[in-house]
Image (cartoon, rainbow, N blue to C red):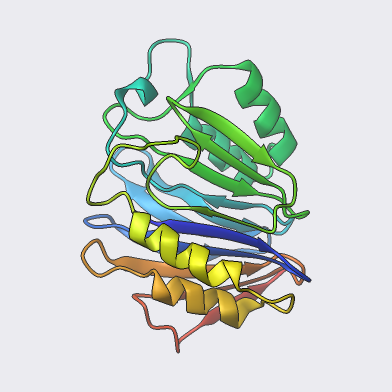
Length: 227
């Protein structure tokens, strides 16, 4: 599941709820970034989500239902590798955009990972293997939950997150110019989950280069890292 939001008001603020089950995870703050890592049986701890000191953010919701067009077919690049390259500052957002424009990209077999990527200027890149991508130059706000954001009539699925999308849309459409970290956490709280539980909520104040996060919907126990 998961919910990603990017808001451009007086500040650029990014919010992310990680909703997962049956995975070992951790937040690892460093001087280069704050990484949400998942322990993969083959690769070990992988930095899949989070923020870096350059001002980029990587969110990666899953798409429900799975679209088998996102499965590898040959000479494809896995979207996870592109996301990690952005998070680890090996590529810029524009370089990722150019890459997906010129090359084939995929997800892992049997599971469609999407990408909600943003940079220090508040530009947003949404990528959905099997459907394509969209680039938004400093939008007022953008939301991604668990259905393709640019498919006119996405297939219905209990985990598609339409209710979360609509709630976030309602709240962000009323956001004032002074939208800040506290406001972003309020949105994340409203769209947090218990069935597939929200295990980490993270807010990145891009303007101030400060990352805030909490575990297990404990929104009164916030940890902080400033670059």
